Image (cartoon, rainbow, N blue to C red; front, top):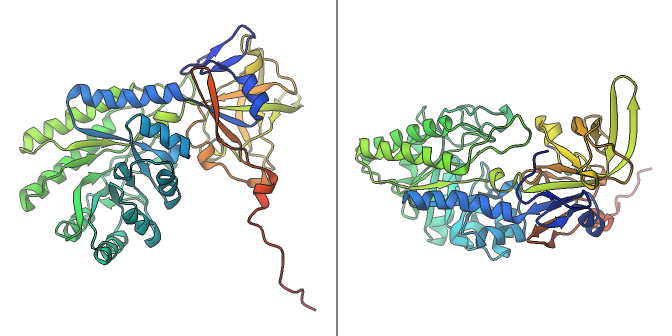
Amino acid sequence: MHLYGTQNINENGHLTIGGVDTVELANSYGTPLFVYDLELVRTRARGFIETFQKLGVKAEVAYASKAFSCVAMYQVAQEENLSLDVVSGGELYTAIKSGFPAERIHFHGNNKSYAELELAFDTKIGCIVVDNFYEIALLKEISEAKQQPMRILLRVTPGVEAHTHDFITTGQADSKFGFDLNNGQADEAFQKVSDHEYLQLLGLHCHIGSQIFETDGFSLAAEKLMQKIGEWNEKFNFQCTVLNLGGGFGIRYTEEDRPLEPQVYVEEMIKTVQAYCAQLNLTMPEIWIEPGRSLVGDAGTSLYTVGSRKTVPNIREYIAVDGGMSDNIRPALYDAKYEAVIANKANDEKVSTYTVAGKLCESGDKLIVDAPLQSAESGDILAIFCTGAYGYSMASNYNRVPRPAVVFVESGQHQLAIKRESYEDIVQNDLPLTIQKGE
């Protein structure tokens, strides 16, 4: 069994995380429950930051908080000297409420509203990643009305397709994100913002996909962006001060996955950019990256209580848990794969194969198909590994199921980071019928 971060098995044969017994966590906080290993989050963050420092390259490592965001998570990011990538007014508001330094916040998104952009100006965030011509017009209007400067990056699609699932590949030409680098859109966007009184163009941004295990895609994307920067420098004397190469660094979900260490991705990016700076006689820009999944993905573990069982003779054995696609949509949405263990029997041999079904009213609500597990009984605690990214953040109230609680653990300590929703929370925004029934 592959253990992640501080996971271990104690003398009772129970899975522990951060020195805390997961069975005790389930008993204390209930299930379903997300458990985050803060030591692993901190280790990953430091791995990225220290690599840049070791190589003497000025950089910002921004946590891509769409992977998982809440007040306490933003405070951890601040403690680890990360910057922050937000993609909505809600994430921005949460970050500000957490006390995160606004000047280290970068705002993404392909359809930012006027109100969201106003909030970005009013809170004086550090940078807006501009996605389209509509947004350029809004930014000009807001900055001129407020007579307030704003640093920006232009997001471009470099035509590099990462080797990953189609739904989470974003760097190719046919994407809803960014200005195409190859058809003149990026050049037109540059012309619209480069001499604006209040919009301060720092450089370019790209993001080629997610759950990527090779460095080739990042290097090729960096080449294409540096070529364009060189072209603008020659024609317009543009000085690029920031090159943001996005995120998408892969993690291990199952034994089939072979992720690289954080420093490997960083070193290859830096080599490529340095080579082009030397070739084109350009000043080395700051390198910004945006790890999300690679910071929190395998630091998160979901705990469930096993309920019903069903045997389909000669076909399949099902166990059902008290959560499902309402707290982890990825298996249904992406055919995502996970590994698991019966947390209260972690030392036992895996003698059975089960399909782990959720409790939601959908045939496709299966968290793991054909999982090798210890013999399962009603009341057992099932731990599914690597659910820290896009689990809680994509959770829903489908079937009016309350969203789970989230707990942080570190050095034998545990604390509630997000309270479990109640049935009262579910109906709090509902209003009674007031339209009169017709005759």
